Length: 136
Image 1: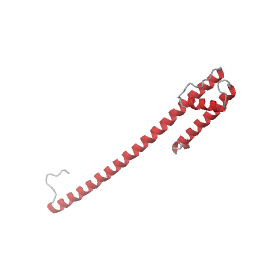
Image 2: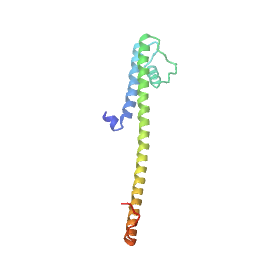
Image 3: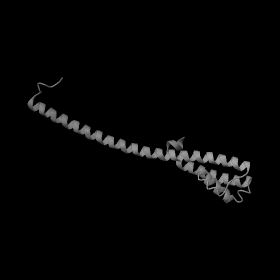
Image 4: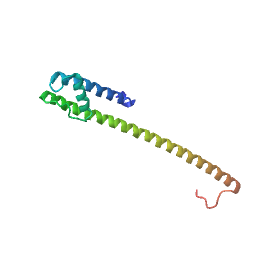
């Protein structure tokens, strides 16, 4: 949770996604050498599947390969959802900070104007006396 609070979760998610791609590619190569003849082909398939692209150039045909593929698909969708949510949240926070700064500046400007008007009103009352139609 510290990473989320400090807004440093993005690098962790990228690292976990990359590590998942490498580990899944290795596992795919180990359990299904026919469909994933090399470690590189396994990693390529895992990254394409994690990214939910699914080119279809490498496809598991065994039951265990399909189980692994299902896990990779769910993981990929989950990680992408988190990444999109984090980026969106950062944009919203940046926009909110800009709006709050603008509101603070406007508030300070209006407060200064009210003080100026109050000072002028006091000066007029001292010069001319209080108005007879003034409300208490």
